[in-house]
Image (cartoon, rainbow over all chains, first blue to last red; front, top):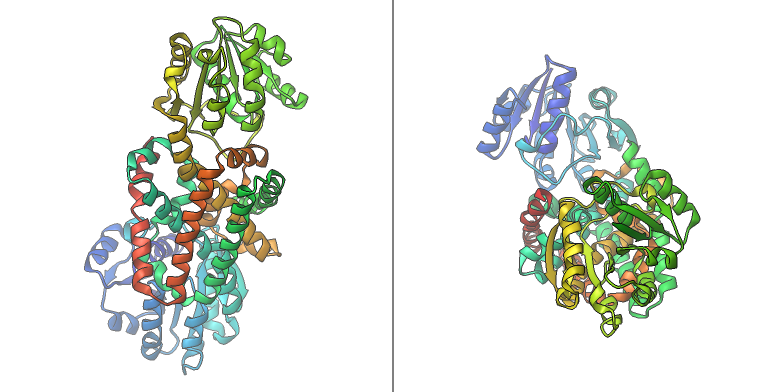
Length: 285
Length: 285
């Protein structure tokens, strides 16, 4: 089996490493706009060879699009156009609605499987890839009924064989949930980082006074703008609503503090404490 | 040497454990409003005996106030009134301005040392205490010139002997910096927790779709309301300004997303990425 990874970074590279362990005879072709990333991916053993996209598509059983979501929108129709009969293309993008919509009427739509692995770190590039990123995490599959059964089976088998748990939903549901449980937390971290950097011109003061709590809350502010700008753009209706909800809670809390209303302040936090149950569930995963 | 810990929770208990290792002959007296916490603190070996506050003060070389900051405001004048000559009282509160102001003209002001260890977790109570919490972290000492040299020396020696690095500043500076590097990140996490809980009535969806990034960003939303409501209240001028700055950045980012301005969205995040340098400094600590 030949698998092409388009975008040999954190996600594509980690997928290749995990599959290689289960299927040592599978061959991996890398495609990347950056020659440096290509060299690093080969040196790290993520892929066996680098090829131009056209050549890679022609020889692949499976093409995995693991680029930023704006590039997925560019490449997916082209890959489908060129995809050999019996081959499959899948994408790992963090948005699903626009991507699915774009190829909804493509004559080869059934060879495409739209997925999103719920995993990542704040780091990017081939150097950030590691075999343990995906195993134990969840995989969302969207519009499963629009994929033919062989393509769906191949993708389901590979991802569940590397230890992922499969979930199914519509692209609309996916994008709405993701705005709240992922996209919003990234924006809250980016804005927190900016607020502190703006105030504390003297970074030494942050070093000296910040504790591990700050470090954990702001960690996602290290995430890649190349990856996130197009995600927020493609999911802007949901993200904008999530941000509006978040700002509303912050304004309520600010009013409670300004009014010295300790009872409401207490209740606000006691309610937020209920997230403990949810986190215990996530940490058990 | 006899040390009284008032509030045998995460911070007071962790201090006792660290000091016990360096000074095995020091004796620890615990004071706590909760009989259950008293039993747990004894069972865990945080303190050697539990006593009522009056009795504990009478026999102590050092009294450490490790309660929520509203209780520190209540207890500090009383402890100073009763404190034997030659003894010292210190407080570990996360706010410093009101606490210092309150006893500024107390006849025994010089026996008080105002400090704040830059360490904590989202957990609380005696069970959460652990010996490694404070070593390697920073300690802020405020208004050092108002403490007599013996009291100051004792506190500096104990905290630097357990591996903390000492910093000095005014209570005003302390509270301003803390609003940004600590209090704001707690509020951002509480509000994020509430926003997601409010939207996702079905907690299973959060379990299934949230990743470790969400978990890290929202972690502080598990923090204790008893502890944090009075901190936000005592530092409300700074916290309110920090929140206003944060909300302003969020609104700017929302406008950028609504306008589909990918260039500005990219630049917003690239600027926030500079927090990476700061985090590397914190993580090296």
